[in-house]
Amino acid sequence: MKLHVNGNTSRLGLHLFFGATILYRSLKAEKMNIVLTGSLGNISKPLAQILLQKGHSPTVISGKADRQKDIEALGTKAAIGSLFDAAFLSLAFKGADIVYLMEPPFHFTDPNANSETLWQDIAHTYVEAIQKAGVTKVVHLSSIGGHTDKGVGILSWHYHVEQILKRLLPAVSIKTMRPVGFYGNLLANISILKQLSQGFIGGSLALQYYGVAGLLSGKRGVIMGNYDGDVVNSYVSPNDIAAFIAEEMEKLFTGRMVRYIASEELTGNQIAKVLGEAIGKPYLKHGKISDKILASALKKQGLDVKLASGIVEMGVSGRTGKLYEDYNKHKLVLGKPS
Image (cartoon, rainbow, N blue to C red):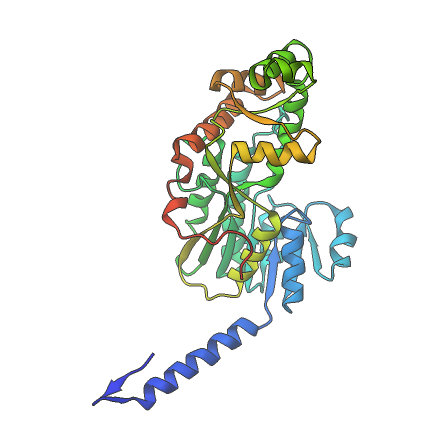
């Protein structure tokens, strides 16, 4: 930055520039008290470790008392209590420079769990606790698809949580992190792959995708989805998410912002190749099934009709591009921050 007065560089401009640089560096190096929800999950644990390495003081919230020793073994403080308890959360958040919020994962086949409602209840509790504690900086883990409540299936649940958090007073700055699909979600293919490798169905699919020679040579299994093999989807590692969140925590907070996080963009065919080589089936292919057949398969695994429909619609949004319409508007650096 330079200010010019009669063609000469202004001393005031230089002072402002160097002063701002020193201020930024001091803010970046400042030790912060940061409260993390998510216990020792796939993101919260590596995030806590990164923050410790950077010299910050993280406190990790867990709903399980038996996790306290493990949390403290990392060198972090532990706060044991429920995410539905506003009084507990407000006490845990008190004095925090930054609070990291996430909603706990859910079990698809649990008939007693209504995760959509539970997440919204937790979001309302977060708002109450943040306002009571006087927290002014929030990092929220949302998801791709959080930009809309239309046409993205179960990912619309993140949209509703984001809207609740937006009710916080304008003085509260919020950084919304929207990672893409987790690599770990691909593990769901294992049970389906086993089902589609057996009996008459396994033989029929082998004949369809690998021909008579493939069938007779024992080739079995297809990675199935309700989208073509050349459709590109994005995936992310929890470690990359943790690294980007830690980076954002050390940047200035102003207002409300959204950041997408992705490690890699892959087609269904590429995923089938990688997984196939990993499990000793280098010939493995991606196959497309109809939305109706996918919904039926999900219901056979114990999912209710609404949840199965939501997962099917999520797949549809990926193949039509609906899922990535906002993601594509943001410039993205794949992988870990430099």
